[in-house]
Image 1 (tube, helix red, strand yellow):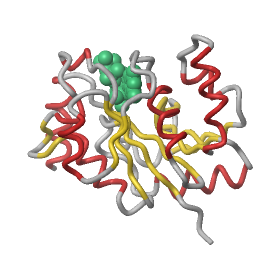
Image 2 (spheres, helix red, strand yellow; image 1 turned 180 degrees about the vertical axis):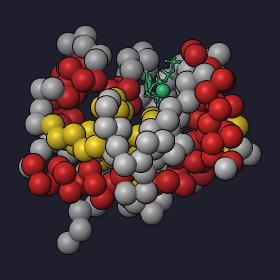
Image 3 (cartoon, rainbow, N blue to C red; image 1 turned 135 degrees about the vertical axis):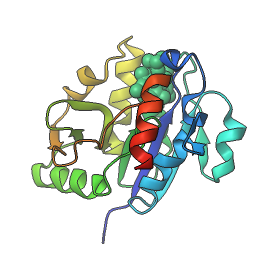
Length: 196
Ligand SMILES: Nc1nc2c(ncn2[C@@H]2O[C@H](COP(=O)(O)OP(=O)(O)OP(=O)(O)O)[C@@H](O)[C@H]2O)c(=O)[nH]1
Ligand SMILES: [Mg+2]
């Protein structure tokens, strides 16, 4: 039987480089930024959760479960991941950010294949050069480890990843797949790219 896979879209940051606007809700080519991510995921996963720490009612309009960080202190992406890991009943959790609108259509298939092949605990996507800090597939049994890491005052995603068996899957064949929108300037540039 194919494994069940849930996704969490992280939209719980402060988006300081976007002037503090709620990044997932910012318009990108006529729809909220997060809609581009949702569109990329619906055919790849069994369920979707949205992790947001403000404007939760607006995020509910797409009909998916909206989760706020269990620890509301803006502790970084791991705080959103651990919240979703504790919620999911699936075999695997896919984590993606709300500000990567051009994710690969074969993201889940390849991360899962890599993870199973290497019998790893987590599979991180790379663009061929850089590992993407919040594009990964992981096993829900890691929740207590992640919680303990946060409880110990640590925040750094790669430090926590390094404590587990990791495989990196390269998507160098898709050079634009992980373009990331952190500023208004990047948003304008990528809007043109998507429109093409
Ligand atoms: N749940 C949760 N997600 C976070 C937190 N901080 C960042 N993220 C998410 O992690 C991903 C990568 O973060 P960034 O791109 O730096 O986003 P950001 O922190 O909102 O933006 P900046 O303030 O400009 O750095 C985004 O999807 C954010 O929504 C947090 O404290 N909690
Ligand atoms: Mg970002």
